Length: 96
Image 1: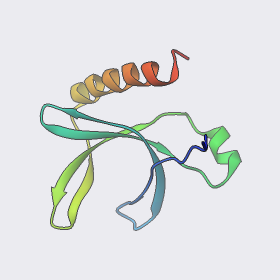
Image 2: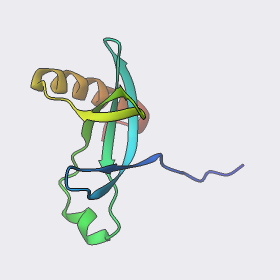
Image 3: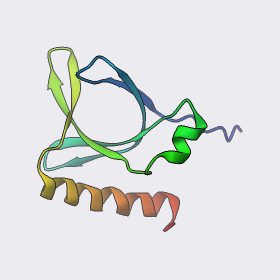
C-alpha cells in the first residue's frame, strides 16, 4: 500500500494572462453553492518561505466552458466560509 500524497492542483489565469498554481485544500457546499480553499504552489522554495501562509476562498460558478472560479466579494460570507474551512482543517490536520 502506497502512502504517497498527491495534491489536487489547479492553474488559474489572472486578468493579465499570468498563470498561478494552487493546491485545492478543501471544498465545501454552502447555501447551494460550492466553494474551494486554495493555497498557492511555489516553484521556488524561497518564495514559499516568504509567503504569508494565507489561502484563498473561491466560488465555483457555471460557465459556458463548464465552470470557473470567482473571488468571493462579500466579506461577511468570506469570514463565515473561513470559519467552516478552519474547523474542517482542524478536524483533518489537528489543531496546529
